[in-house]
Every structure is written in C-alpha cells, then in structure tokens.
Length: 403
Ligand SMILES: C[S@@+](CC[C@H](N)C(=O)[O-])C[C@H]1O[C@@H](n2cnc3c(N)ncnc32)[C@H](O)[C@@H]1O
Image (cartoon, rainbow, N blue to C red; front, top):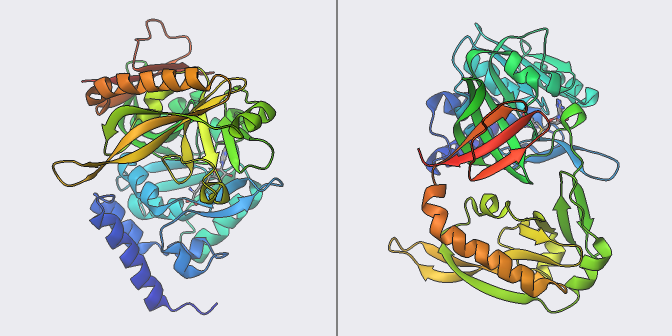
C-alpha cells in the first residue's frame, strides 16, 4: 500500500486533537508521545486510516474466533499512560506486548535513559511486536515471550508495570519486581466488570491512586480464568457471559427468552450508569448479557450499552438492565431512567430484586462517585469491609468509598 506520510501525520494529529478536546488526554507527555508514534505501523494488516480512528483493532483470534490480541483503543491507551505517570529514565515492564504500539509510546516517554521490556504470552504476537517496533525505529524496546504472571526477573526491578490484558488477580511477582514507590497499572476484573486501576504498594497492601471503567480481553496462562459465553437457545445472538465458575443453562434461558418479559421501571434517573455494575455485582448470579448487532436490530433485547447490559441469572431465568429517556437536567443534558427486563419462571422475583437494588443505588450513589481500591494479600489479617469485597486466589480486593 502506498502510504502518504503527510496524510498519516495529519490523521495522527487529528486523532490526538480529538482525544484532547474530549478531555481524555490531559497530560502533555502522553500527548507528545501519541503525536510522535506512527500508530499505523503497528497494525500493518489494517488500512492506515483505520489506525487513526483510534478504535481497537483485533489482530489475532483463536480457533473459535475469539479475539486473543489487538491494538487497544487509543483513548484507554492514553488514560492508562496518564495513570502510569511515566518519567524520563524509568525502567518499565509492559505485560501484553500485542502490536508493540504501547511499548513504543512508553519508549518515547521514558527516553534514552530509561528501559522498556514488553512481554507477550503468544510467541507469534511477540515476534510481530518486535518487528513492528523495529520498523517504526523503536528497537531499544526488549520484547520477550513469557507469562506476565511471572513478571520478568531478567530486567526487574521496575519503576512502572503496566498490564494491557484484563487480570483476574495480582500475582506476587508484580509486587516483588516493582521498586519502592513504583506504580502498577492494571485492568482488574472483578465479577465480570473491569477497572483500570493505578496501584502503589504501601503498608502491606496495594492502594489505588486512580480508577477508570474499561474493557480488556482476559489475561491467559497462569493467571487466566475461564470465561463462558453461553448463547441462549443456541442461535439467538444473545449471550450470558459468566466467569469465576458461575454457570448458565443455555436451554432453560433460551426457552425463557421466547416468552414475554416482565418490565419494571425503577425510578432511578441518571445521566449515565457509572458504577451501577459495581453496585449490582453484589447480587448472586451477577453477569453480563451480550447481544450481537443482528439481535439488537431484531429488537430481541434492548440493553443499555451497544455491547449489552449488566444482568443477573438463575437456573431458568435472567434479568438485565434497560433504559428509557427521562427528560434533561438543569444543564440540558439527557437523562435516562433505568429499568429491569426479566425473563423466565423467576422473572417477576428477579425483576423485583434488581429494581430494589437500583432503588438502593439511587440513595447510595453520591458516595459511589469517590471510590478507591485496596488489595490485601490472601493471608492478611483485618481486611476491612468495603462497598464490595472480593476474595481472589492471591488477594482480597476491597472497593471502598468516601475519603
Ligand atoms: C489488548 S492486547 C495488548 C495491546 C498492546 N499493549 C498494544 O499496544 O498493542 C493483550 C495482549 O495480552 C497478551 N496476553 C494475554 N495473557 C498474557 C499473559 N499472561 N502474559 C503476557 N501477555 C499476555 C495477549 O496475547 C495480547 O497480545
């Protein structure tokens, strides 16, 4: 393909301008790096214009067609780099080399005095990342194939560790290989929801510095957990996504989907559903309902996001959140009312339970705007109670609110 370099520079600057204007890029060091790194050279399989839409581009899939590697969406790349707070001279470990794009940004930010090591569990992906980095002139980045759960003993310690796959837990190696005062940025998966969290190790536990909603493909290997995507009725295009050992019966739930649902409006009126997922994740059977574009076009389900909605599942019934317009606020911003749509023999009961939880959210939401996370080792004594406590293999995650 004949690529006009003036054109790619213009497209790149336009992408960065958009990220700045929308308030996503707030740090000039991240902005400068994103203006310098030619993103299109890291996705040679895609048309160069696509690289500068800023969208995520899947580069590898497994035999079932499930995405296993991609370049991440430019907005979340910028947010995570800001969370990481990279300084010139830093020693950095990236887990999830993917295309090598983020590693190039890290190399720009840490400069010639710093080092960047990027590892990927997939040998082919690691090879391609190294080729892309060399083609773009970032051959000082060390790319290795390995399981990120083990960190990278050969280059440790690190001032910064960034994980670019959804992690279920925090392995010991990340704490052991992070220098005192270092920062770990990780998309942490908690009951199916993911937050990019910047953490520092202090007083025997991780304490968050910032936290953003995001979505990432799950980490594989030693720290991996099976995620199930159960298609209801076999071909509906509506899936229940569960993890951490939760089950969903495709036959019973497919039958439930064929019957008219119970719809309950909750009176919970909001601009957006921020942290509602976290609030609902207390419920037994909390999961995600994912809908394909054809299922949405047929009006089979009406979830609150283009990808689907938060949901709750029992052995034969499920309920998901939906929304309807509810006027505007004093700034003229669109408001929505959240509702529940439930299917199956337990539908009425589920709808009432989820609606009750939404009413409680309505009262508690002010305190939910100020959340932070603490992560304690599995054997820690005196783990505090939070908005949400989750016990993992290596750790206890506590989501806390207030100051
Ligand atoms: C979203 S992609 C990373 C995007 C990448 N940072 C970029 O700039 O293109 C996630 C990557 O994590 C890798 N991965 C998954 N589990 C891993 C693990 N345990 N250790 C290292 N890499 C892993 C996948 O192979 C995939 O390439």
